[in-house]
Length: 594
Ligand code: OXD
Ligand code: MN
Image 1 (tube, rainbow, N blue to C red):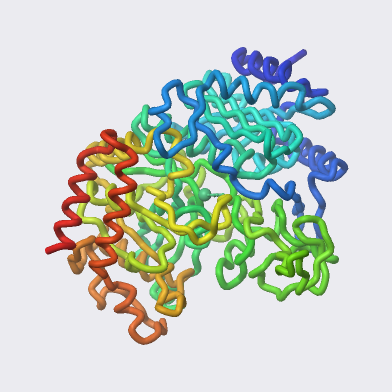
Image 2 (image 1 turned 180 degrees about the vertical axis):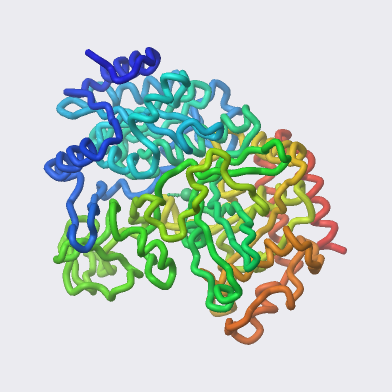
């Protein structure tokens, strides 16, 4: 057989995996429009993709996953390092030998009657110092179609593999989509990912969470850089200066909406403008100028559909009008799609995410309302379609980061915004982040979980060592970004949001950048610096009476309760937890008690 590469390591591995999975044939993805069309046609025939109304939604398709395969299955996700302690208390761990053996049994013959696609892909611009190459083998045309949006895939990557020998070996098979035979395995010491038994994006688009976060975080520690669960956006101020921020929020907490927000009228008039670099992942390196620079390794958005509309995210509404794959949303009779919280009211009739007839008011056998779209239904769309896409997306150098923002979904406790005292304190703030669970994870919605740096599901190694890495990185920077914490989700006693969120969040980001660039004054509190009331531009915003005070209220008693929870969490890491973080913990207690 003639191979489209002379990289022997790649050819040998593809052949070895083919011997295991026994596909009927092997197709190498070249990234051409012609091949893309052919695979889409085959996917339509096989039922993996349903073409949508090509007049209204050109280049768009619908896909339905299996009913038991709609979100990341964290309990079936493992870090397989030789030593258990290297995976840490934050990960499920399996001995590599056992993990390979277990998965091998499921992969064996799993591609019989199917094609194995070989997808060479680059996370980051091909050839950039930031970028990493992966090759995903899969028997899913849905995965191929998604990877062609989410990554730079094909010929140019194969050319790069003639120069660069190394790549992340990513093997995926749907097998029979049996949840009892589902495993998402990461072997950071082998630069390998094996995912079997799932067809859900977060489990199977292996360039995303698996490579760009779990494997990359492990590599980043070794190679002295950051792989983070962060959006990246540029905020152009009235003088034309663009300040870039990187912000970490747990899944489905509004990273995508924030990354492409529309400035409120007053700020737009002042001259503010947004540039979207990424909505989910940031790879950051210290450059020769001593500052932190970032790229988004992805080339597309894999966003949550429900709640996306012209009010919450008009730029996304435009982005997903073409070249988009919708997953688990409602199909309307006119071949377009709908989800809860879309612009239009519910259609009179449609086919729901499970492929069943649906009408408003449909209830299940327990009398519970049936959702038209799954709460974690998604769209996959190219960043290039986004009206606010940054002109620096393809720059090998990335963008300079002025501020790092951590945030969670907390109904109480955390104020709208506060700034850490310094880098070490900022790492403490990130390491103690907590949020309520959302539909993006299997689990109980609303339950609070500690999610340091929004990385708890994605850190590919022991988080105590990850905290050490964060502290060490700060020492290597002459122009370190300032670190902030935000909470858009504080509620009043009746559970109503105190802050309107969405585009209005720019008011907070304006303050953040003022702190970074103009060093305006602030108010010191036990947890950090908060804005002086005159420094937050609230022109044209109507907050309810007393909301502003509540948004910035720091209730010492609640914070002392929080400290107890932090202590419990920190203790999980035993002696591994860097002493600097205990110092910060003690200092916080001291300030709260004084
Ligand atoms: C995502 C997630 O899909 O965090 O981005 O779950
Ligand atoms: Mn995410």
